[in-house]
Amino acid sequence: MKDFNIAVIPGDGIGKEVVSEAVRVLETAADLHGGLSFQFTEYPWNCDYYLEHGVMMPEDGLEQLQPHDAVFLGAVGDPNKVPDHISLWGLLINIRRSFEQVVNIRPAKHIKGVRSPLHDPKGFDFIVVRENSEGEYSESGGRIHQGDDEIAIQNAVFTKKGTRRAMDYAFKLAESRRHHVTSATKSNGIVHSMPFWDEVFKETAIDFPDIKTRKVHIDALSAFLVSQPETFDVIVASNLFGDILTDVGAAIMGSIGIAPSANINLNGKYPSMFEPVHGSAPDIVGKGIANPIGQIWTAKMMLDHFGENELGNHLLSSIENVLDSGIKTPDLGGKATTEEVTNAVINELKKL
View (cartoon, rainbow, N blue to C red):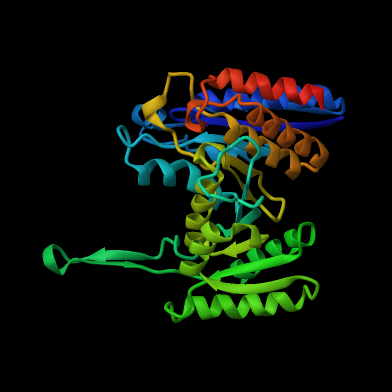
């Protein structure tokens, strides 16, 4: 029996609604598997917690999370209550950085039953590997002076170690897919960090002679994701570039509400964290229409992380079958509630 202890942080807004639904799916998957079980521990850390305690998580919050096998996160943020830079850096980014979750992975594919805004999606199926610990989101920098003389300096920090491990992960992932890695760069305009990125990419490729490669400037790459997404397999990108590209990926899928992601710890010292790409959507909270697919697909990625790939594939097939049957929330043009979509996924999973 494989027993996994999962820390659950529903977070804010619709996170509270979709996380509980995804947990139901995971419980069903475990029951069907027979040799798998989950123990869930919920932590009520969010913007309401901040308003009451002045922090997004308690002082020993990371110590509470560390013994778990994974963190299952909902949506973080409620800008009407707490500024985004406080909520994100106090919880989400704090966990990512402290637990050395140095790689973020986000898949994008043409899902059956979801209308892509692309005229002909051509069955695109790619995954973005995003360096998750440094780059353009480094904390190095500051502000000086006031008034018209005020200056803001934001330093992008790229280390060879951080860059190489993200690229290694991308190449190894490509070995299990279609054997192609694209590097997102901008070395024609960013004169220090991006030529460095290109050099490390070229060095990494030497160790993977069976993998085809190409480098594409980020502006052209963003356009290609719209005009020819089917040509991509694995894309490796810096922190900022990866963040932007994955929102493009969610958009061409048809809704950011279905997009999943995983923050991966590579050294085994800390748990990895799994979260959907979408935000807390305060405008639809309490209406029962939040799309649970992003959170459920995120659960699929957690199953894959635990080595339960077959079960994860069954879950993704269940998602596609449900959407293809027309059972969808309003953001996808349907009339189903959050609970109805989840129930349909569970019933489909039982069939498989």
